[in-house]
Amino acid sequence: AQKITQTQPGMFVQEKEAVTLDCTYDTSDPSYGLFWYKQPSSGEMIFLIYQGSYDQQNATEGRYSLNFQKARKSANLVISASQLGDSAMYFCAMTPVSHGSSNTGKLIFGQGTTLQVKP
Amino acid sequence: DADVTQTPRNRITKTGKRIMLECSQTKGHDRMYWYRQDPGLGLRLIYYSFDVKDINKGEISDGYSVSRQAQAKFSLSLESAIPNQTALYFCATSDSVEQFFGPGTRLTVL
Image (cartoon, rainbow over all chains, first blue to last red):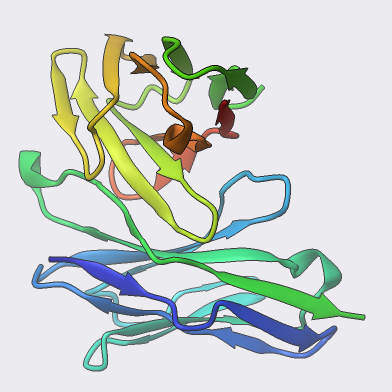
């Protein structure tokens, strides 16, 4: 069975500092994708970053980077230079990736981490 | 215009009522999904569809049904709503790996 674990229910960070949000996963699929989504208080789900399990390099998107350690089954999100607008709930999610009709695209989500950025 | 739209955005209903949540997308994707989010929890998959003739149950399908009226439309129905179905409901679409989410429907069952 696939599972995503986010062990930090809540985090605080000072504005302009970097913060790491933890995510560990469990899967028996040989190929999979890992996502991070941001959910502000308004409720929408905003895609941040994606990492494929066979990608050689860690993914980066602007101030977001994904610290992917495959052997440890971890996919931590690093936000550099935090801004007040980064205050939100953050979700790690996973999907198996395969070719053909067996690729369902179903996402398995963690429970989320609430990040609060202090001015 | 938004690529994935959901109607209504907010709904309050009473126990036992039938309610339908609608999702439309302009992305041309074949795959569509319905998720539910409860406070303090991540999203959980209710149903998903790969095309008009393909409907699949997700993790928590009991108490729900779906209809894929067209490639662009995927509706979620609660045949007889109960209070523990109070949640935030998301529709999503995908053509490969990344999923694109609608804005969500906040449903309250009294």
